[in-house]
Image (cartoon, rainbow, N blue to C red; front, side, top):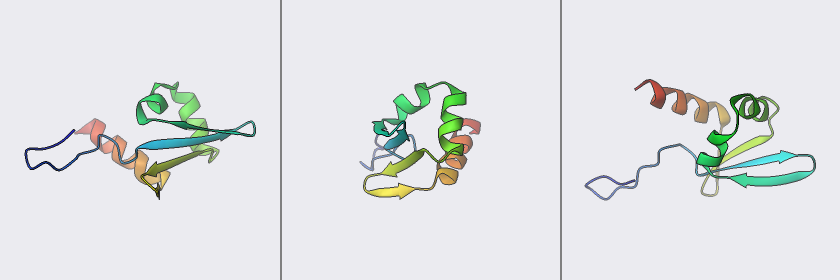
Length: 74
């Protein structure tokens, strides 16, 4: 998504989620992550099995959740 000025806007404050579980690590897009059942997503976050990334920068899960919550209300 971009604006008239050409600035790229991201619909989410992250571009991928790395999930660790059962000795395996898998990478999900934001769409794939949000397609998971809500209880599954919550469990990954609470159990600290989900790591959110924007490029090479780790994004704090609390920041992700707060921004997503804010965008859903707006």
